[in-house]
Length: 139
Image (tube, rainbow, N blue to C red; front, side, top):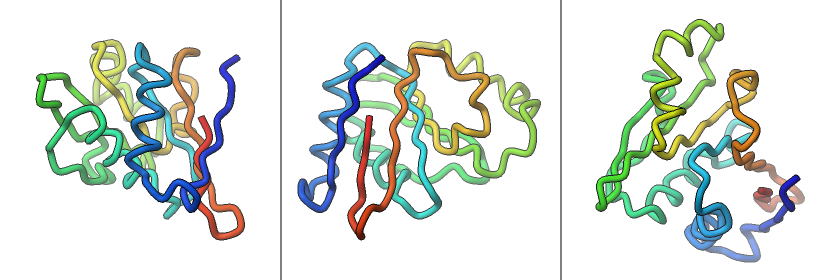
């Protein structure tokens, strides 16, 4: 089991620093699942992660498209998923999730609880919440 790290964003005040710590902590990992309530900042944190990975692409929520593709300056692919509107696991099969998840590219997943059965055991789970008006990130 991986150790849990808690970061209070109010104390750190730099989401980019937390994103860099996440990537540094799990340098071989490519699948990251982000859990948290609506409005906790999952997409904002993913923007910081993409920047930490070296992407200069505009990062937006793929709420309606289900997946957005970005690329780092070194040509590394990043796939950003949002499964909030997913109604069935068949939708995930239909987008060809295997080609993304098993590509070796970074896969950053919002609302992973909708596809929990498809996540591998080595997926890094990131939990975000508000606690006493502070945003907390645990991984």
